[in-house]
Figure (cartoon, rainbow, N blue to C red):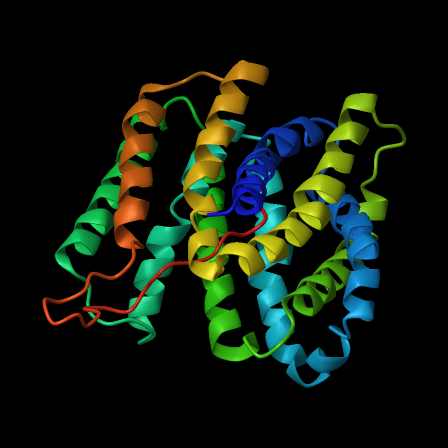
Length: 302
């Protein structure tokens, strides 16, 4: 990988590992609908000129139903649930549960016929990842909110469905056009509830968190992600998914004084190793043929 590729990769690993921290900070004062509205609106306005300059919005007119479905599973539903969940659970636990996205994506791709049967190592990865979730939830259930953990797992399911919608119905459209359209729709959708539930005043800490979530973790992150795909290709870019949870856990423990629990200690390596194995590149047979199609869900903005 080139120096530029490494710089983009490291930047995204950090940028998409910090949203859980700032969501946790923001929901101390902001109701989830208001947070989603404040996060999507500035990001949509910042990315809109890029989409208009590249003609990205004109081409999606005939695919609006699928764009709306993508918006629901990638932004509108998961960002609300994630904000609501982080009122109840730690940012590190939320980030680690999101690490199950590649596992869920592997199963979905197989179920929809987008991949051949699993090889032994991928099956081992699925079982390891599932064992990690069981360990994480089972060991942390007494110290964390069960509803919050369930909400984050629904978020992971939504994030795994997003690339499926893209690959089946939207892969012919410019990515930035789909992203900007989704941000605009989500902003409009949450505008009424966001305005009605908005507090009369916000602390500087909350305002800073919103700015980071909207400008850095959404607008700038997507621009960097598009650049990373151009530099290293879509397959390598998905590796970002495996590093984000580590960043989320370390930041939560270091900056928010969140506990490094036994569930995290046992579940984290199992989930990460399972995700890598379950979505790893296909092996070649002795004759040089690929034994199985690639699997995996690409990174998403938490």
